[in-house]
Image 1 (tube, helix red, strand yellow):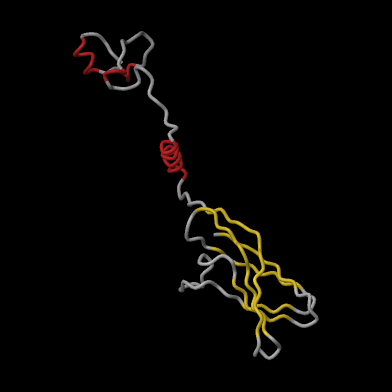
Image 2: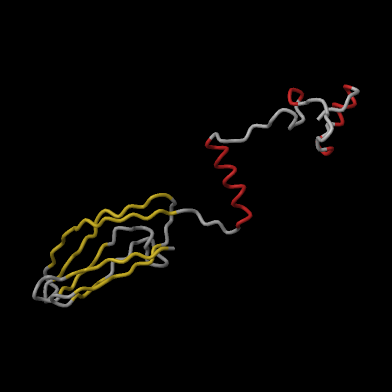
Length: 156
């Protein structure tokens, strides 16, 4: 969950009544719907108003805000004017890690997908080509007992 803020400044001599279309749909949808929130705002003449929006991203990745559309209404509400204003902004969305113990497995999987896996050294597995003779000081838990029985010498 993230919070963004948008600052509106009214430079005219009349109060501004407007409807905003935020650049973050559909992550700021009205609860229970799939429609983006379109807040109504009133800014006094020559004043400033800050609007805060709670975002609940639906997809991970980089979310970029391009523009905000403001539809302002006349004093009687019969006429409106609409303008689109660029707003620079981006949001990086990452998946939640509910448990720290899963982090090691996820990063290992990412390293594997990236091609950065650790290769087993000689004597570090049970494959035939990785077996070697036992030397004093080797861990006794790494002895391959099947290969030892076949070769009649201790192999790790």
